[in-house]
Image (cartoon, rainbow, N blue to C red; front, side, top):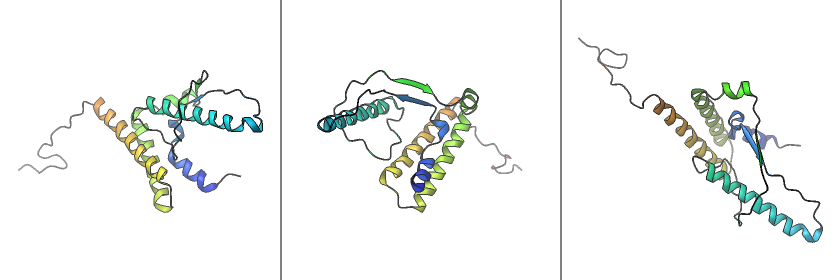
Length: 165
């Protein structure tokens, strides 16, 4: 049975349309014996940490939406990974418009902030809100730059300006 509180928070951390791709590293093992358990756990921890570091290095913001930190280990060589897009073409391309992405990100932030305001949440969830806000700022800045980044001067008689006499 899933924890409804955890599910509600998870749904507010990340917009599912922003998770367009998944990547997996198949690890082939038989069931470890009792004597192999510690080494097996150590290897899995190192694999998780290695993937985590790769994702952070690839991130434009140098951040990952992880509520908890991954314990540091030595990085290891991973097997070949497999990556694929999980959103169908029609949905994927319609959700790629920058203004739609900005609106969806702002909505995700609002829902997450509401969850935070209503509950006693982890420090990691608060960090996630900051990272989401940084992602929104990055998207908005990129979009403004696409339009030249300069704002025209207000002229007399415009809606917010003084009425010229």
